[in-house]
Image 1 (cartoon, protein in one colour):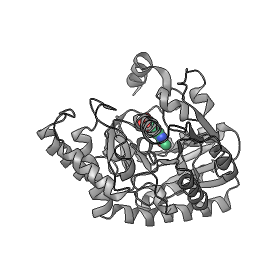
Image 2 (cartoon, helix red, strand yellow):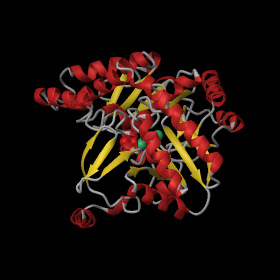
Image 3 (cartoon, rainbow, N blue to C red):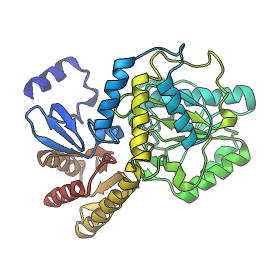
Length: 395
Ligand SMILES: *Cc1c(COP(=O)(O)O)cnc(C)c1O
């Protein structure tokens, strides 16, 4: 363990230094990770909302082997059956339109920015600008960074000069005022994740859609963190009964391997023409094959349905804790995207994360005082009990 900590310091740029935990992972199985000393950890973080079906799921491993033995990479100049199948399934589950695949969330945002500007070129030359929410997060590459409205994330970097308009979440008046500037698109996370797990209300999302429709403004939903069943439906927007024009996805889609992208509605599916965008690696046939297996598990095998029951149980247990412990200021989130806002100094939350680590439970911290849980959809009731019992010890 010490050896790995030393080498990490010596050879990796220290971008994650304040968050890094002193455990070296040896293997994963189901809802647990095991370190090089053999200690087990219940994983309520899932590598930041990625391992939606837990670790080394037998069906994921089987797909890895099967696709791995066939081919890993072929480029975009041949037909790629695993990716075409995944695109069809994602399309049919959402807009019915076409998909562009990327390798990551930030690249999905970049693709969305380019699509939005193609919309300007082709259909809305008099419009300009993208409306985004204060404190929203959409990635860290330079184009995406401009849309990420967290100053500590973007302030040291030169940003591209395309126009953005920043508004307060849940404030319809600010959105209406933004419309006077004739923007091209509105982009938001249905649950603001890294801002501190703020779900947007159904009423707000419906009004946003209504306004976007009236104004011919593209409604873009960043479902990179909320997607793949995390909030109880395949994508979170479904719960607000809205239909975005463009959906951004990544994180959980590749079953643990990098994969992201955008899905457009049919009427916006041909904004990109030949040569307008591209990337060498995406869609990885291997990531795509895993994506198909993730969808099999969530939808066909009923994991999504089952996870709803366990997440309800988790929320009811957390609500009981909140009633009993003053240190819990607020509970926020949806499904398996949970923010436990603690009273007190950032120290309190930091210590709690370390205490839970000692107990063999991995949790996340965001915005200094918020414990964030992003468990796998395979979480069991007894895992919830284990977490609640451990939490009680330290609250
Ligand atoms: C993680 C995340 C991104 C960026 O994805 P990366 O794969 O880290 O580039 C963008 N938007 C949201 C909402 C995210 O949670």
